[in-house]
Length: 121
Image (tube, rainbow, N blue to C red; front, side):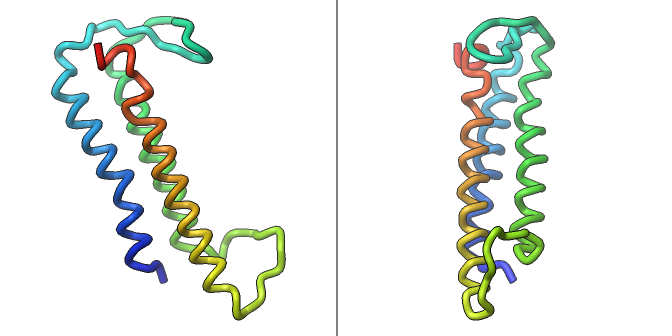
């Protein structure tokens, strides 16, 4: 069973995604139709449609689904150490908490920072 505070903390990435999506929708008409697309570093590798601004949101949602599937069934994780029966719940809770922190971190990185040079001008 997933503790309530884990579920509550896991809602934070979705709030961040919703806020970023609302902001993106409000400035979408002001963004040029063709935007630079970056790969590694700050080099403009090519250009694409402004619909690519929604790609980080979609990728983030896919990552969050995978993280949630792991949080929901922590017993499916293959730990590299043996877990004693009396420590099982504690280890699962710590793992779930670490995954929630990872989800928040990934969302912050993939959110507004992804296209700062296009949207925030």
